[in-house]
Length: 151
Image (cartoon, rainbow, N blue to C red; front, side, top):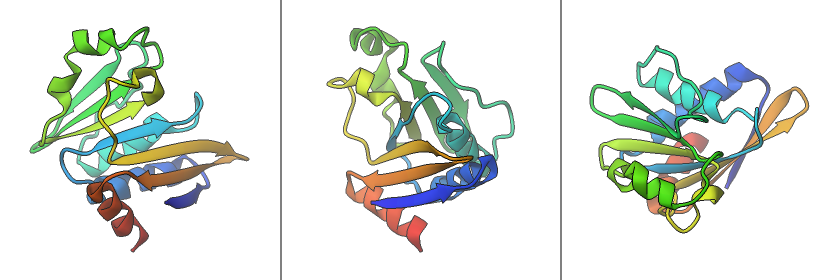
């Protein structure tokens, strides 16, 4: 497990950039945190590191935002408004779990039982004017990501 204090939005974007450079394709990342905790900002940092400079918005109303990059797809899910896990089946969720993709999933507890185990779980908490990020690994790939981030 690893904890980092993020002083501001720039620090959250920086963590996202570092995270992208350390993630293996095919990774599933669970994002926990209250509304406004910085989950989408973290994903935006990952996208910027990948060379994507278009808008990166929260998929609160669409459930998923898709970003097609040169050699990788990034899927950003927000399950906050999910009514049942059957909605994930209708969405074709399993099709997004690909070896050439990263899946970021906000509010994963709403899809419990229908989601795979994550490689990495990131919890963002508001801490004064900044954020506290806690990262934990649940797979060998996630452990390598944490080791890369710590070095």
